Length: 71
Image (cartoon, rainbow, N blue to C red):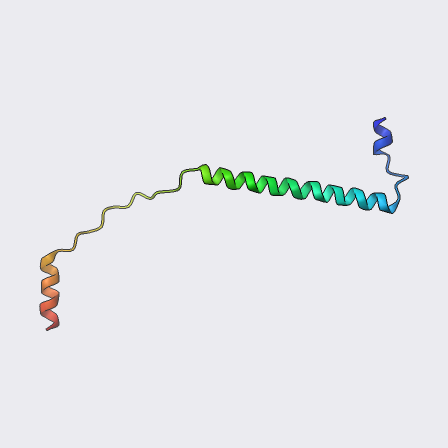
């Protein structure tokens, strides 16, 4: 029975075209589903948070000196 389904020697060009379109559609759906799953997995993953050092506090004396030099 399986050999009758696999035997493509008697297929017409319309049957070949239909089979190619069906395979293309199945592959396209599989690729789209794979990308959606990949996207959903990325959104569930915690985002990267770098370990940044605290910003340096500006010294008030240095600011006053720069203002004096400008004048």
